[in-house]
Every structure is written in structure tokens, then in C-alpha cells.
Length: 155
Image (cartoon, rainbow, N blue to C red; front, side, top):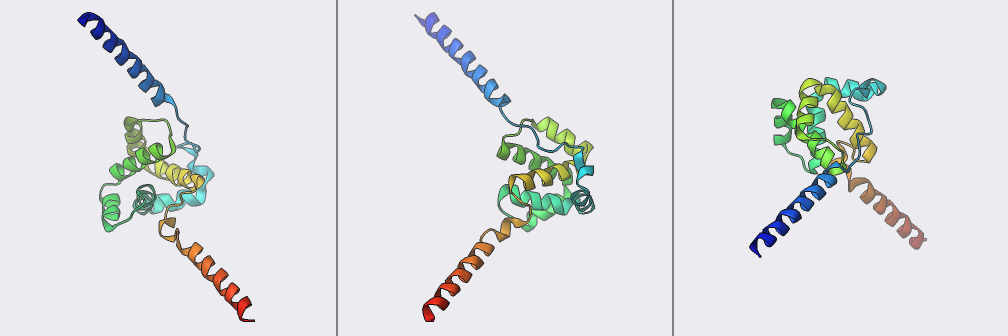
């Protein structure tokens, strides 16, 4: 009886491991090529000229918070910050890849990687730097609507 139980547990573990491997392979690819930075010259110029700033903005977008530590980390340890961003973007948008690939991309072609991140975030609707404007325009619109409604009631 004990051998059958162990055999059952071993088979169950094999099935679970196979399912886990299948789930890891499911995902999408990047919408923009790593070396497609030439097709977006404005973003490429800004990202390369102000690389640590762009990485700090991307960190703020992917982590939904921002602080002075993010800026310092991006300036002092650019490859690590960019690598963490890349992993976070992959996780958020279910993009296929791994940590070793992220590290290779950021260390070997850092500026191209930052441009790819910026374009990917923009396409997905997460615009770096727009984190602090999330409630502003809507509130302004609500105030305009309220003032227009009161103006009509006063007449």
C-alpha cells in the first residue's frame, strides 16, 4: 500500500510540473523589436539623452509609486534598475522571457532596451510620467460639468 501511495504522489508531482511548464510558455511577445529604436527617433533621442530619467519614469509607472530613491537608484545603478523594469513589464503584460534575457538586454544594449520599454508602456496605455495626472483631468472635467449645471440652474 505504501508503494502505491508513493507512486501516486510521484505521478501527481510529474503532472503538476508539466502543467507548470506549460503555463510558463503561455504569453505574448514584445510588440516592438529591441532594435526598432530607429523607427521612433523622438523617443529614442529622449531615452538615450536622459536614460536614467526615463528609467526612473518607467519605474514609477510599473510600480505605481515614485520617490527620490527611485531617481537615485536609476542614476546610480542604471543596469539593475532597467533590468528590474524589464522584468516588471514582462510580468504586468504577460510577455515571454526570463531574468537572464532581461539582464543580457539591459547590459548589452541599455538604450535600445529603455526605448523598447517606453514604446511598450505607451502602447499598453501606461504612459511614463502620467502617474500623477491620473485624477487631475477627470476632476477638472467634473468641476466644469458641475459649474455648467449650476449656471443653467441659476438662469
